[in-house]
Image (cartoon, rainbow, N blue to C red):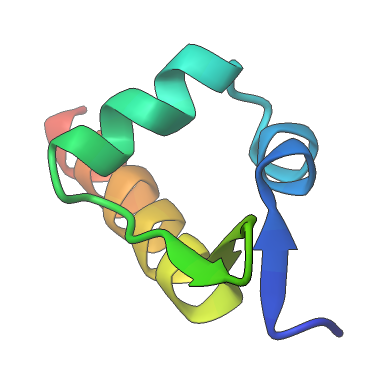
Length: 61
């Protein structure tokens, strides 16, 4: 399993749009890692965000 995701990979894995990815970043919910000119998202951050979202939805019901 890769340690870093491309934005496209994050979109596909978590079924969100590109604009949502950037919105999440602006709100500080996920961080971008710059490797040279490439932008990546740490898998650990992606999983933390997903866990927070799914636990919040479960608690709202």
